[in-house]
Length: 321
Ligand code: NAD
Image (cartoon, rainbow, N blue to C red; front, side, top):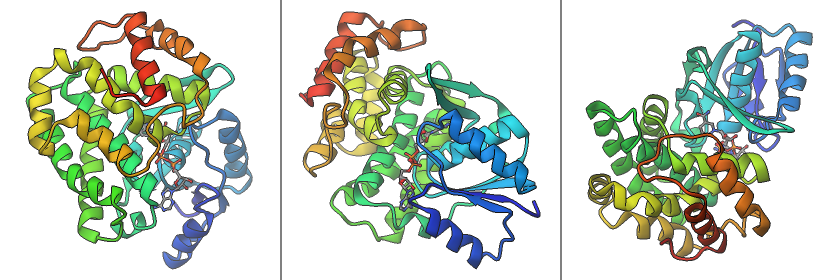
């Protein structure tokens, strides 16, 4: 790339521009409007700038929203993509693009969507605020946890998933307590997020990701926070069907996983119910229906009544059953 288009969110516009300046990049332009869930109208605006500035590639500087925009541009224009992730979402390691339009959120999976280059620089994660650090870490953990019982699970992926959970468990506890500047913790979390993303890319997902996909795409709920809240409920739903996974998780985390996941939010004053994220109560039935609309593998058979119960508990923030 000789004239890349720099991508960021508005919130990270300054940091992205500073990065480009320090790295002495000659950028063709800066599109600083990357948005969560990759709305296609934002992608179209970025495409216009890419064309009018004669950019020959994209550099995405930021979290999953910005990397997602980079992938959306690759999907449409086939440009080269360098990703510089600053959260733990892990999109930079997967062939998956999720995007939204008026009809909701859909995903595309294609190998060419994996960015050509990724730079992991732990110092770029130091500014991630406390809530985002915890919830983004939990978003990553969800990738590893679901890979443990997905149809794509295999012995190598099991090793990666166990290592990912072990490596994320300690730093995420530190982040929840407000200890955000320890480079070892940040480095462990970034390493874990990379492993978690490999689990997502190579394994597969089940109920948890399906619910978060529906909730995020239908009610525009924040991605990482939604994952963080839903994870203990989805795990409790499946726990009876995955005893070996529950044992592995307990060993990797060092304590009972469902209670630990919930305490990370509850005990540290972080949002712990879907109601707090602004999901309407009358959306519960719709979310259950949408989550069942297309069949997908899950360790425990899914039915609408059980899903409504699970979503209702998550909406209220009650103890998972
Ligand atoms: P995000 O990218 O929207 O970032 C959240 C906020 O934090 C933004 O305002 C961002 O600018 C800011 N931020 C990011 N890094 C920062 C830092 N180091 N310091 C200060 N502020 C920082 O959130 P996310 O959770 O990383 O990504 C969510 C999006 O990623 C969703 O659209 C989701 O669908 C997608 N995603 C995709 C995949 C995939 O494999 N395709 C995987 C995970 C997430």
